[in-house]
Image (cartoon, rainbow, N blue to C red; front, side, top):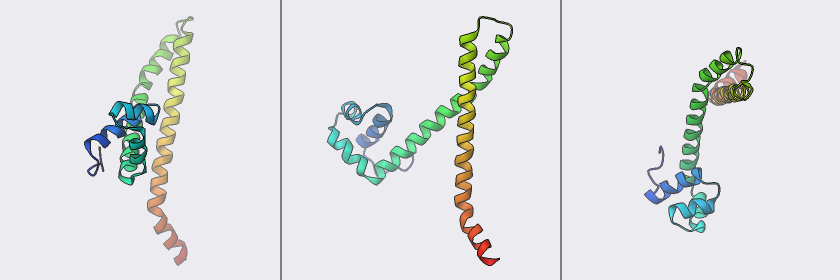
Length: 130
């Protein structure tokens, strides 16, 4: 976990539990601490940053898996051209391709946003000089 050097091993487990569980109560039970402790951890900037970094990493991993599955989805669609009863597989493949396209678009939007943040000081300086 990047940027988690200041967290205790228990807090690192708490980060993972919060990402795996539906509620803070479930996470607290899984780690073996009180909900109050989990809530206190959530107010700590280092803990929040670790949670953000891990959530982003998990999201990237899921998107990578989704995008890797697109080749299979295309294969299903091609095979379904000759199979009149492949409706469920066709629908699943189509949903997978749609989700993959949205994920790719989101990734592009995020990368463009980071570029704009980096370029902002330069573009302000250029406009001011003209």
